[in-house]
Picture 1 (cartoon, helix red, strand yellow):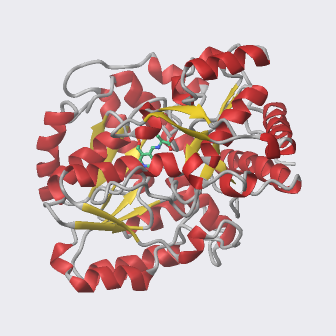
Picture 2 (picture 1 turned 120 degrees about the vertical axis):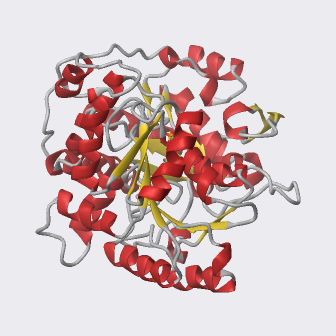
Length: 455
Ligand code: F0G
């Protein structure tokens, strides 16, 4: 048993409303789980982003917020934390991860240029497209095989990457490694792969960046799974990961255990100057970037807490606990289990529902009805339509994600979640799929509504 390295000082009441009420609420919101009120949810596994529980140390930092427009001391603390943990020279604060993506892509991506990566997160891809670039996924083939055990399914396929680069090296804006790889199931990237990608980018004079939202979880997996790292500290591994990067974007809502915030960190002063202009324009002055002083203080402290090894062992242990329980009950899930979430294979869970009728979304709806548990579809609805043909994209991975917020739920909550999923599994043959009632032209997973198929 992995023991929790903290105890609970503050609690928040949660309620399980009756089943008939849940059926009514989800019907009323057009079967879109994003439209539910949080008080109608018992266990919320929609995301691990901004949903973590801050520590007493972070809350104490909140009281020390210096809300000066310019020169806040809390920014200094943030800058020091990033420098000391990641080793970059310059830090630009942003309101959250996508703010950092916006600023970076405005400067680095020219129209028609390509950003290859392992698997870009959806906001990352959207920001590259927003400046008329192209985001290309070059993850290894194993990433698309839910049952294949591979320790680093977030790795980039080096020959695929070189293939793209060799076609037209001038046309590559930069290369991005997302660690861990959220869209691929929270799967890590090995240091060996990071090193190889760096060799390729260095040879071709291309910048290499990391989407570092879950960098600490990635480092933990390296320690656990990669030869030669067992005796290294998380801090040492993080430093080595980042030593290959020209910079990173960060959503502080994940591994910095903050409720909001983000930043860009880089080494190049000339690039910093360019990015600073865009930061002021889109986010705010370079010593707050859309965050309050108190948010920056909690973020600076959270960064240090997020790389504590006992915390990471327990956190990743929680995800593994849910994964093993579900797997032992015969539920088809992505393997190995990821860092922040368990991903259930919707097509395997509900094989009688066609992909065009959204098996993973159906599963999310059923888990809410069954027990007030909210997960999220990472599948056909999220994938949207092809920009050129207007046709639906049917992704190879059609999944329901159960993301575990940091330091929020205990084993009883997680046992309950497993019980609910298993109950839904027992009656799976009777479950019917869905179709669009209203299909939103953009960001359709957030804004669309659905109706259940009659038969
Ligand atoms: N990069 C990755 C890998 C992410 O997972 C996210 C957000 C972002 C960037 C954007 O950061 O939300 O702070 O603007 N992921 C959340 C999720 C929303 O639920 O996985 P943000």
